Every structure is written in C-alpha cells, then in structure tokens.
Image (cartoon, rainbow, N blue to C red; front, top):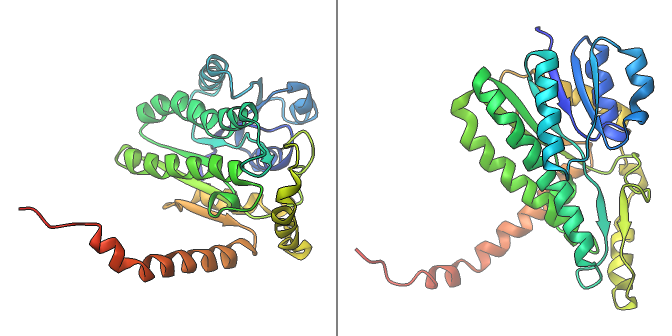
Amino acid sequence: MAKKIWFITGCSRGFGRLWAEAALQRGDSVAATARDAIQLSSLAEKYPDSLLVLQVDVTDRAAVFEAVSLAHQHFGRLDVIVNNAGHGLRGAVEEVDEADVRELLDTNLLGALRVTQAALPILRAQGHGHVLAVSSQGGLMGEPTLGLYNASKWALEGMMEALSLEVAHLGIDVTIIEPGPFATEFATPGSLKTSTENPAYDQARQALYAGFDPTAVGDPEATPPAVLAAVDADEPPLRLILGKSTLPNVRSHYEDRLATWDRWASVSDLAHGSTRA
C-alpha cells in the first residue's frame, strides 16, 4: 500500500496525537498542527523526516490556508485531511454565554470548514483525497446541558454529509468519525468550558451524570487501527462510530425518533395541503 500524506489538526494531545503517531509509525508522513507547536517537539525529534509541525489556530483563516499550502509544498501532495481540533462547552441552553458559543462554533464548525476549503482545491487537482471530521456521540443525539456542543457537532455532521455528495464524483471521500466516551483529556479545563450554573437546571445535570457508565468509557489507545482501516478502505464509510457504547444508544434514540414521526404521520400529511397540478 502506498504511503499516505496526512494533514491533522489538534495534534497536541488526545485523538489527534494518537492518530498522527500511528500514521508515522507505519511509515506515512504527517503535517501535524497545534496551537502550541512546542507540545509536538518530542514527536518531531522521533520523526524528523516524515513529520512537519505547524503552529495553527483553526479559528485563524489565513493561518489555516497558509498551513495547508505549506504542507502541500513540503510533501508534494495531501491524501488525508483530518479535522480533529475542537473543544466542548457544558451548560444548559439558558446558561451558556453567547461569546462562548461563538468561540465553540468558530472552532468546531468553522475551523473544519476553513481546513476543508483550503484543502479541496488541492484534492480536486490530484483527483483523489479523503476528508475526515471528528464528530461525537453528541453529534447524533441531544444531551442535557450539552446542547450547544451538540449543536456544533450536528452542524459539522450536516456539512460533511453534504460535502460527501458534492465531491464523490471528484474522487474525494468523506468520513465522519463519531467517538463515544473515551478516556481522553476532553473533560479537562483546556478542552471543556463550563458555564455558570443555574440551580433551576440541577436536575438536568443530574440526568446527564446519572446516564454516565464508567464501563462504557473506551481506551483512546485502541482507536488508531479503526481510523487507519477507514482511511485504507477502498470504499470508506461516510460514518464510523468508535467504541462499543454509542451504537446501542444511537439505535434506541433513532428508533424513538422514527416512532414519533410515525405516530404523527397523519398530522404531517394534513400539513401538506391539496396537491396542485
């Protein structure tokens, strides 16, 4: 199998770091971005010839486009684009600060948009490429006190699904990665901002915590083979769940959604009105 050239955002820790190292270990080359490039120094020392470290904040459009261009110039092509950079926001809809929501969307949604827009002309010219975006179980269902994080990931899912339909004829694949709960640093202050709490929503918070099952938390070290399998597939999946707990939760959630639509189908039909020729 030919070696691949990766461009991965958010590589300072977590999934981005693990997947970058897995690609490097098997002989691929990686352009790895982080807001603080120093955090990638040990990886750069280990892979001096196959790793290009770029200091990038995905909320800076000019910096994103420059980084993608530099990576392309350095390696000569780009095969795999991984939109991994992101963070969380915990707070009920009434609690969240609008500035925090704008920052969240600027990173989780618009950051992925910027990277994808910068990479697409290169991938189109090559006639091949694979764009990945890291969503979440939270991109598949709403969760109490995580509504705006859900919204950022739902929007990412919609954008990437539409993108897959736009670029299929250009030889470009799209995969949305949907991890369940994993023992990453996601819950640390650097990755998760918490809104000022209103006691009116304590019950909602308790509902979120009550649904947490420690045995459902996956080991992030186990995820690289799954991502590599998707990247190497002749027909990559549009969506790939990571972990055991998410699919049963999603299946139940979507069964409930379909059942609700079915129960209200007669009302939906009435809303159609008279068919006009």
